[in-house]
Amino acid sequence: MDFWPEFLASSRGKEFVAGGFGGIAGIVAGYPLDTLRVRQQHSSNTGSAFNILRNVVASDGPLALYRGMAAPLASVTFQNAMVFQIYAILSRAFDSSASSADPPSYRGVALGGVGTGAIQSLMLTPVELMKIRLQLQRKIHDKTQQADSYKGPTSVARHILRTEGLRGIYRGFSITILRDSPSHGVYFWTYEYIREQFHPGCRKSGQESFRTMLVAGGLAGVASWVCCYPLDVVKTRLQAQSQSSSPTYDGIVDCFRKSVQKEGYGVLWRGLGTAVARAFVVNGAIFTAYETALRCLFNNNSGSIHAENAI
Image 1: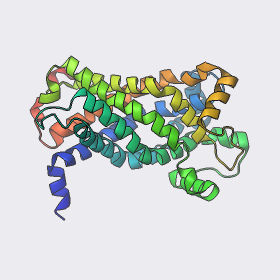
Image 2: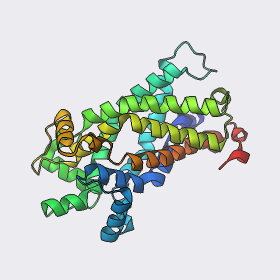
Image 3: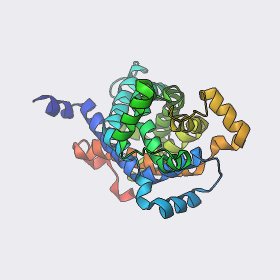
């Protein structure tokens, strides 16, 4: 009974819970744009995000933009909390020479991010698989004329286990690691570097404005997506296919080769504009919620946020 009060009172407990708040804020802020991104990546057409948005709303209603959100939202609190917790530990582990009173070096930040991305892929792969299947359900259902349709994440999971086995739940695991390891290194390094440039000394003092949190977090998200986007397109296409229908791709290299041969190299960047817009909104929200929770919710230097500079 004493575990949670003691855990929440510790610095690790604060990192964990604040990360959870950040994850929820990010999902709610950016999910509609994520749905548009996935549909752009999976489509063989080069329609704009606006055209896809108009077609989705006209055919399925505006709530279709939030289809599949239950899967990431149900797990995002724990997942994002673990990401920030793991990052806090690894960034220190890779920079053991730094004192506890000083922030980890940029090298420690980057290496800690890479390790965090690799570890979190274990949690993220099944969630993103179910999310993608739900987001593309209408299109796949119309194309294959399958009788079954998914009612939610649990329905997707049961169907995958029944038709593809446990291995099917982790379809796309390898490409997820290849995407998330370097992108998380870029992600955390960019955030720490930009916030320090905008507000010198804030990495140690924690005294930055809401504007700094929003912009540094948003730009960190943009940088991480740009560096890994072709891998994300391949991941979406691999996870969208199932064994119950004839698979189009045999693996990462085959998916890359066939996609480029059929649609040109531009396919690897399809939907980038939507992804970048979403990344800025989502990650600005994540870091702002995370930093604010650390300072305000737990009364930890709550006066250090410069509200007068808030957007």
